[in-house]
Length: 122
Image (cartoon, rainbow, N blue to C red):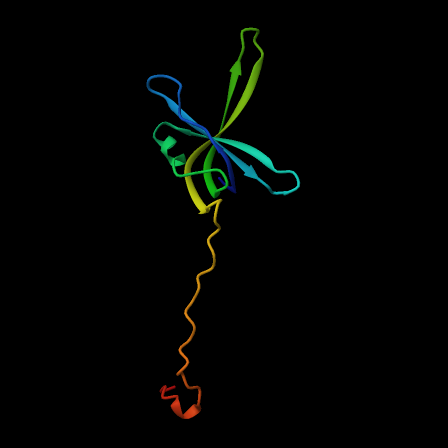
C-alpha cells in the first residue's frame, strides 16, 4: 500500500527493548483539504533510518504494510490494534522550496526557417 502526503512530524527513535527499536512518522493526508487527516506510521528495526532525511513540510510517498493484532486484557476483554509499518519513503518535494520547472536556454537567434535551408532527406 502507499499514500502521498506532507510530513507533519518525525519522532525520535524509541528503544522498546535492547533488541527492538521503532520510530514514528506523522503524515498530513489531505484527501479533503478542508479536513486533513494525521496518520501515524511506524518504522521498525533497521528501517528507522528511513526517516532521517525527512523534515516537516516535505511532500512524500510512503509505502507500508497494514498489520493488525488482538490483545486481551486481564478481564478477558479483547481489543484490536492496527499498525502501518513503513518499508520505503520517497521524498517528492521539499517543504521549504518547491522544485521549479527547469529553465531552458533560449533558442539561438541565427536559426533560419526558410525552406531552402532545410537539407533533411525526408
